[in-house]
Length: 416
Image (cartoon, rainbow, N blue to C red):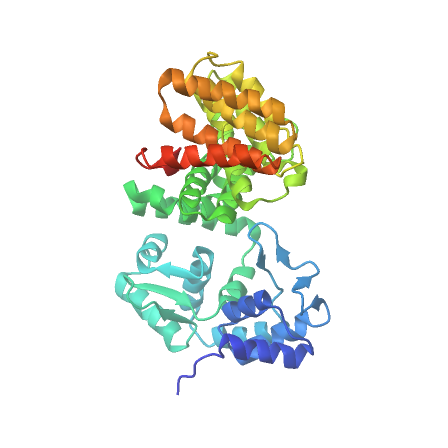
């Protein structure tokens, strides 16, 4: 009789029963996901965590994997023994296949297994996988093109933990190269998956593809508003290049500049660590590299990007803008956009209302000169924010009404 696992709510209740404290929502979700609700697995994990973890707050000692911010818990010995007993009953060929599949991930497809173990014929491979399904170690994924997943994350992790680090790297390299070939022209659509495997195989295949796929994955994550995922991908790419977001010197090439710019955009969106100026630091490194490479337009794009503003706190974004102003003609549209951004920085970060007013006037003059309604709208919007911050309500109302009136006459004003 096939039995389903416990619900997430039941998992929380069981953890509370074993640990004596109500677990955090995050902990409950992660344990439920990793164990599939298997009561034995949940109980053993809870027993392992109870003496070392504040279950109520979700804080713990030595178990969080900072790279992906997911729970990384040692597999309890009781769980390892239970899984080992199940695996021992299967054939050696089945165990070898599942060990390889554990490196691919929680989910894997028949197509990549065929490529990775060509000595096993298609029919025989299906028999091996049927054996694993009969033992309820893996299961087919509904509505997928012959794809499978491990019944529990802990089964995958048990198999994976038995592989040496050197062999893991070689297997990741083979998996990455095979997936890249299978995906062909569609490889960029799978950049996140490829970046992961190439990153795990960097000691074998080198950093080049880690960097390129991490950049693609980061940009796609930004497009999908997955800020935390984007930050992770850009940082992995920088690490692979030997750069570091907290280091003193940027890596000397344009792809590093793009990675730093992507990292900064993700940090702005997440509004993280404003006090430590993480985003401005990332932007500055990208800016300097673009300038040194003669890529002025890319440098200006960085300078006008919304900085992690916090009213009354100076991030240093103004210095970046003033440097960019020296690179462009004083009456150009680029200068107008920079002046608008500079006014916002002066007014909100530095509380310099007069300095902000001068910058906004320069931006509006340029907008009038070029008859650019988009620049005018952006400048008025920034100026209205500054007026409100400085409690200049008549000015804020006047500029705000003017901006609203202008927005009704501009196609897609949200882009300005």
